[in-house]
Length: 318
Ligand code: ADP
Ligand code: MG
Image (tube, rainbow, N blue to C red; front, side, top):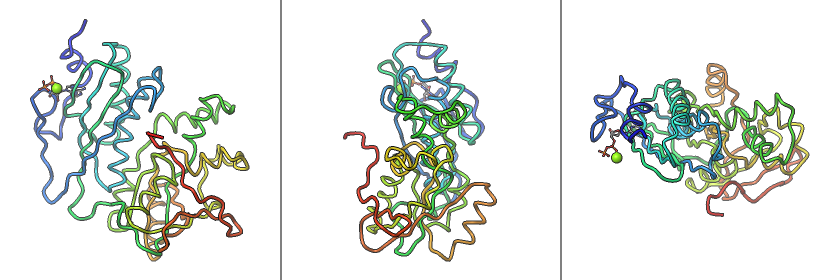
């Protein structure tokens, strides 16, 4: 049986370039750039709740880091370092090897370094702490939306939720659509470059982890404002569009989680700059509604009628 130290040594000890001291001491030492603030966040993924217990370990490694990096994107921060606290039912080295590969592939793609963590035994779960840097004073927050702002969203929505619906056996998808939706669900790509480009442009920003209505709802609540969304403008993922006459599909679009796109608000005079950012990043940026003074979130159809007023979305304790 490998010891805890063997496992750390084998799977979580790759050399670092941007840390003074990484894995192996009592703490990591990180050279924080002058003039920046540290953005720090933690997210836990629990087997059976956030991923299937028998899920492909490479995907679990990728996604557990990607969702944390997404929080940095939503702050306009450059993700730099991560800590990994992993709890394992047993020392399954094949599982660990694949998990570690997925984790490091995502880390390298995003310029993040694993600098420490903890390894314990118990029910399968992994908790990651991510640290990023953002020039002092320009971080993107939830509580800074302004009345009259446009509401924007990046990419396409609903593919991850559609993939989950298919995996749960509720619908059947053609093989190519299923593959696309599974990729969206298992390998989300955090919008780090977009977050950085939106510094000094967007007013408020959030990443969509629990669904558009729920996450936009957090901006509204923190900013003490309301919003109108135009249903017909929402960028539904192409695999979802032809299901949209069905309520469950509209739910994927409005309340499906796990897309990890950014939702942000910005004043109308920034439209040109935002369109240019989308062109430069080759990323669809869509204007989906506007911020209103009166609290509440309304979704309007093409005729201007309210079609949904409650905000659903995933609540961990519901
Ligand atoms: P301590 O007893 O001081 O907490 P540990 O034995 O838990 O130290 O960890 C030894 C070293 O390995 C520390 O530098 C810690 O940050 C690192 N480490 C432990 N588990 C992980 C992991 N899963 N990923 C990355 N680094 C880890
Ligand atoms: Mg420890």
